Amino acid sequence: MSQHRFQFSLGADPQARAVVQQGLKAFNVGQIGDYAYQDVELYARDEAGAVVGGLFGHSGMGWLYVDYLWLAEIQRGAGLGARLMAQVEEEARRRGCVGVFLYTYSFQAPDFYHRLGYQLMGVLDDCPPGHQRLYLKKPLPAIVSPSA
Image 1 (cartoon, rainbow, N blue to C red):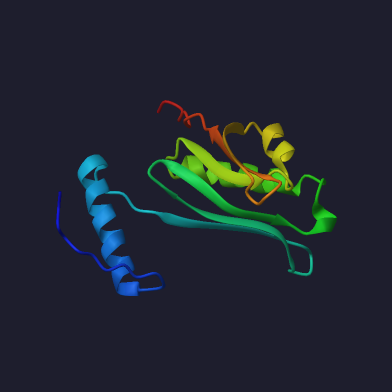
Image 2 (image 1 turned 90 degrees about the horizontal axis):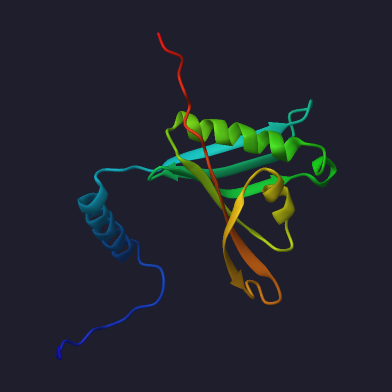
C-alpha cells in the first residue's frame, strides 16, 4: 500500500484544470488518434430579427452533441423545433458524424425528440428530485454521394 500523502483542493483552479484536460486528451489521443471538438450554434429569428429559438452544442469523436435547445413559448408546437433539429442533423452529417446525442428532462419535451426518431439510451432518476434526466441518441445514415 502506498504511503503517499495528497492534498485536495475544491474550487476553481484554471492551471489544475488545464493539467487534467491535457492529461486526459493525451490519453485519449493515444487510444483513438487526434480529435477536436467544434462548436455549433443555430438560431431562428423572426421578421424583426429577434431570436425566437435556437440551439447550441458541439461535435467531436464522431457525434454531434446538442447542449441546449430553446423555443419562445409562442413558437412551441408550430414546427420550428423540428426544423432546427433537421438543420443541425444535416450539419452533423456534413461534419461526418454518425449520430446526434442530447439529454432532456422529463418535464421538458421528451415526446418531441421521440417523434423525431431519438432513442432513449439512459435515465437518471431524481435529477432534479422528482423528475428524470433522459439521455437520447439518433444514429444518422451516411450521406451517399452520387457516382461521378
